[in-house]
Length: 264
Ligand SMILES: Nc1ncnc2c1ncn2[C@@H]1O[C@H](COP(=O)(O)OP(=O)(O)OP(=O)(O)O)[C@@H](O)[C@H]1O
Ligand SMILES: Cc1ncc(CO)c(N)n1
Image (cartoon, rainbow, N blue to C red; front, side, top):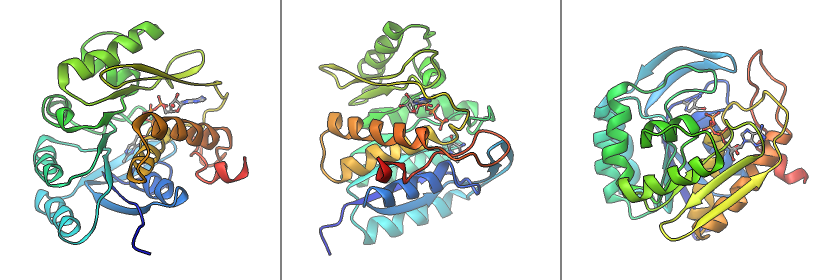
């Protein structure tokens, strides 16, 4: 079978399996995309939080990227946790060589509240990686950091999506409303139109890794050749199902259910 769609994730790990590389690969597999991964940092974390982090040496990140570029097709890629500026520099250079849509999940803080990238990296991500993206998927605090504006209303979310495309040259921005109070509404601005993706808020604490799962699903659908709007709509359905059938596992925020969509 050589017409398989291939997706790559560049991110940190979650040994408890709900977020990071593990969530991405589960999502790619569930959506019948051939999944590949480059590990940036090994993170000792579970549903309650992060205890320690070990960053891969820069040359090891470079080698992982290079072996894939030399050998494998990449139809779409995403990045998650990239802890520091040095990692971003090498990843940015390698992404330039990949002729594929790039989805950036601008991971800064875990669901547990633990910081995953340093302060310098937050600015570098905004200035250097954002212009390379086909899509960036910030949650509310990440969108506030990127734009420098506070977000309280749905109008503020739309303004943030526009601001990111207009000021940072991302092709498109999807602002996720998981941290808002009412409906779970996300806004996508693609440089010409604003699209709304809405779902009923599910009353659960089990949201560990929702952002990773969502951006991995979008990456899968882009790898399969769907348009950006179609990819986001299908992924919204996927993540909503994954949250609605999430697992009551662990002592903290439990993980989402990557096979939930099969049962709908
Ligand atoms: N309780 C909920 N009910 C329904 N949808 C939700 C809920 N929480 C989050 N979502 C949806 O899940 C997706 C991920 O959004 P969210 O804002 O939670 O991302 P995130 O904060 O990056 O996730 P992470 O927890 O991985 O850091 C969005 O589509 C959001 O609307
Ligand atoms: C490695 C990693 N990436 C992203 C998140 C955000 O959920 C997390 N908790 N861990």
